[in-house]
Image 1 (cartoon, helix red, strand yellow):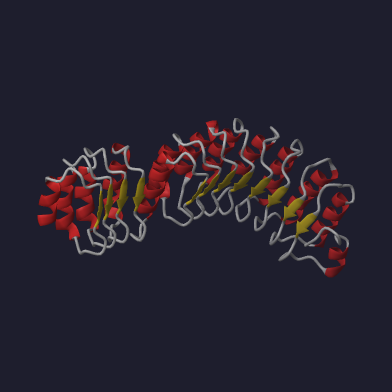
Image 2: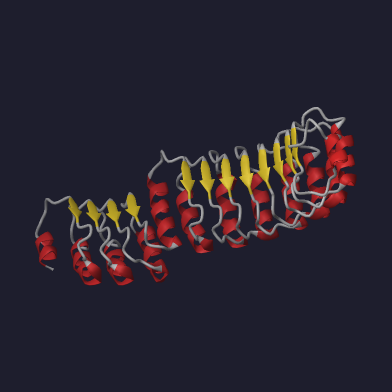
Length: 344
């Protein structure tokens, strides 16, 4: 309280460090009252002060009017998911914040707000890694708002974030006009067929994306069909990971049709997709034609000697494929010998 009163009359202090001072929610309230009026403080460090959700609410409200604070450290303060509304409000209403540290607070909203502030203000930022940050669709919405104003991001990693088709739709809007993003990792989410459609529609106009990971996203033949249509346009994609989805032989047929007109894709991962021998036949026929594929992963797909024979026939007429993965299938040693030189 005494410190807050002193700050109220101070017109020169620019940086205040209060890490590990047991400020707590009440102390945060006093500081927030000052922040609402202060026009000189640029950096505020409140790391490890147990300000909790109650303290954050006061600070977030103060930052609605404070336009001078650039750096705010609220790391390790036991801020929880119940503060979602205040975090979002702070991000959307305050454009002066350049760096916000919310690490060590144990919830996804903190991670995404910190990243979103940096994305919004740092035009030199090229890589964003929010893997396993529990973003969900709400966090994805905040992230997309920042990505819309920053076109410098080259690599975006959002793996394992519980993102559904709604989040995929938001991300697709970012992809439409993006001319920088080359690597997009969205594996282990739950975008499903509808989310795959949204992204596929965006690929029609995207001319830079080269690496895409959509593994483990509950994508079935319908979603694969939409992606296949995008691939027909000979997109810039060179690596596509569709492993651990629900492609099946029907989806592989659609995918093979799309790839028949695509010469750019070099690396395709279809592992763990229940493709079976019937699905492999479609791929074998694809390999007989001129294709750009150099690496094909078909691990754990219930492929038997029959499927291996089909692949061997296709590969005998193929000049581009260099490696094929068939581990954890049901192929005998004799059949594997016919694939010697390609199989890994």
